[in-house]
Length: 394
Ligand SMILES: *Cc1c(COP(=O)(O)O)cnc(C)c1O
Image 1: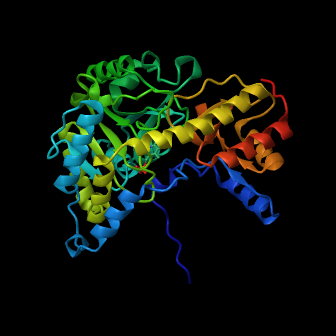
Image 2 (image 1 turned 120 degrees about the horizontal axis):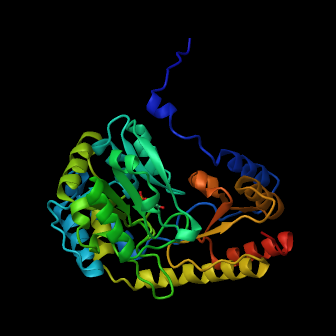
Image 3 (image 1 turned 180 degrees about the vertical axis):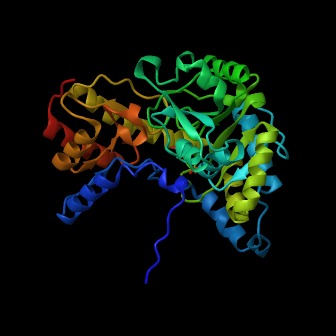
């Protein structure tokens, strides 16, 4: 007899996987022999640079790297992260106490809630947002309070709209700029408001800077850590995933408040043993290497962005071009919901887009397109959209 096991509430309470229906439809299209173009997944299509891959190959041969690494990362890795912050943002970090390595930033984002949230605690989470913020909080038994990111506020949370009793109860807040899924960016004025708000209500701020290097038109995003007082109130998550096309390698970091960095490190030492040292060496190579690679890569995304946004605007959208991330966030035409538009696009054109509701209730009425396909595929995609939808209304 097969036993049945009752899942723990923390797993039962995880939100349903919203893309399951779309995945089934994709499967059906492919079975019919339709050439599906996926603009759904935010995963770089370009390869990791050779100089990084070669470093992995070299270090994989070194038997000293075959043993357990330190769970907080080699000091040379943490030093490389600190040096990168100094060069890129002018931010001083102590590699020993203010940097911890992560098995991808997602790992740290998922685990930070375990460090600071007890069951029933409140955490401020952007909506729409990367699902791991609420996922980690729910696994810790905490309650996300969703901060709507609205177009009229440039997709920044309106801190004055958070009820005082919620702010007083909240222990933590997640923010993320350049933002997935909206492509919005944040400036120093906003980050200063965040620091003041955090100090007023004693809230730990967790900024996710995964896209700080993916930017266009000469714009360079700043780090939350550049703002005075940021290190007193929080940490910043980052990784080489989007910067060097290394999503599969699973290596990232958190930097900032030393107590928080320490707590994450102690938690991690109980659940993982850090990342393979050869992978850490490869990441060091990226962080210390020539950065003309990043400029070239952003140029490629920018060209794809222009093809897509120009085509959508010719069809009737009125989109501004995002200054960061490789996403375009756009409203659905009149008569559609997020889901029905995504289904109609797949049905009529064989193109996969993501319904905005996959990122939270506030994503209703929007869809996300990822710029992670080659130019010829993007040209094909806009061609199909124009042929099937013509002019659209809102
Ligand atoms: C891709 C992404 C990350 C990066 O995750 P890794 O675990 O470092 O690969 C983090 N946050 C957001 C919002 C992302 O889109």
